[in-house]
Image (cartoon, rainbow, N blue to C red; front, side, top):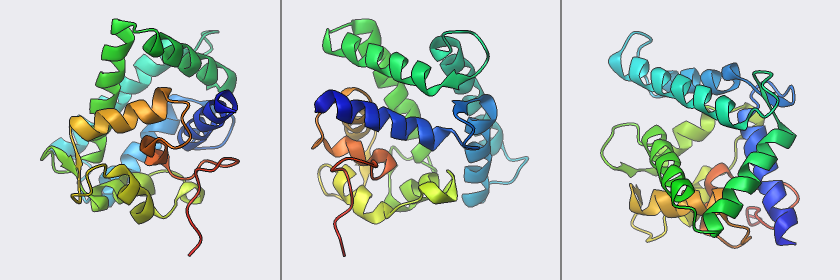
Length: 197
């Protein structure tokens, strides 16, 4: 059950990033949401914030494709993505220090993407802006999800403490009840769904 859940979760993660829905993750799939986010946040196209953010996303994209694109065709298939994350999860649970450090870096990168004003915490508004940068059909009730992700219920997600836990929950945990499963919203075909109104 848990393996099946984990595969569904990583498939959901893949679908979030496959912006054009063509079945592979390519560079433009990550750049389009990044550009949308800068507009949502009101950053001008020539602003320093936009330049730094887009440069960071480009670097992250290059690294992701370099390490997950097993057949070197310049894009990441769902099969490659699942294989990559299953391997990362196994290494994390085996105590591989390099992978633990890498996952912490990914968590901090995620926190920095969410934290629009760089104050070391993520508000619901910032989280909502980030989620609205993805495909419109992937949007969900971010208030309900944020309430679960706010582990200490103080109204913000702290960086680094909470964001590291949330990211590890999502990226390497096969526990369907882990709060971090909510970072990208409800996961189709699982119990990670929003309660009925």
